[in-house]
Image (cartoon, rainbow over the protein chains, first blue to last red):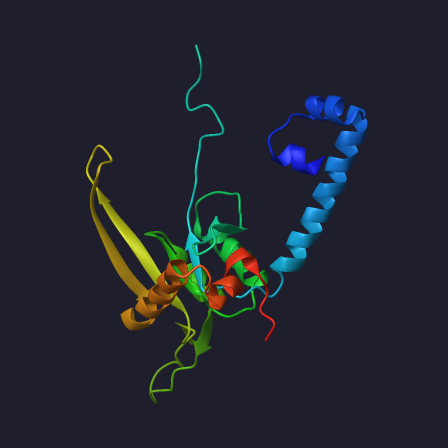
Amino acid sequence: MLRLLSSGMGQNAICRHEDVTGDSVRSWIILASEQVSAFTEYMHRDMHLDQVQIDEFWSFIRKKRELK
Amino acid sequence: MAVLPDSSFIHTQHHGERNLGEATDFISQIKANSDKKAPLFASDDWFYEKALLVHYGFDQTLPYAGRGRYPHPKRLPLPDLKYVQVQKKRDDEGRLLKIKYAVVYGTPKEIEAVFKNAERCKANPADPLLLQKICFSRRTS
């Protein structure tokens, strides 16, 4: 199921393909995301860094002027 | 955003205003998620110089000259800290005119050595050193 998701298939298409409900697919995605988060957090610890590139991205999140 | 250029891995993300306080918090996050050794930092021409000094610096007490008040301790960068600024000069319409690389901390030779090492790893994908570095693998030694 995760392989199909990562290949770009939508959730509804996976339901039809695998003959499962949408709730099942969503619960598997949540389970997988928890695993990925835990794995990333573990790998992040004591990480050796040679080079770090610092960059900024910025955008307006409020309107710049009052709309008429 | 802190990116590891040899693997394009986004190491740390931080949201907030563009000021020294936020930059200091951001650098503290990078340090917390690393082995506390100072890497080579590269950034645009902003205030990271001071933010880096907060987390990768030490206080040096200056000797008393014998007259007046005692001097305040001076904040100096750690010997292994390297920092390069990419200073971009633009015209009034925002077009890029000139790029200048300024070495803020460290020596040009040290920084060149880090860049050469990274290039060597990119040129040889089967290099065991690259396999250690890429995909954010942990160092076992």
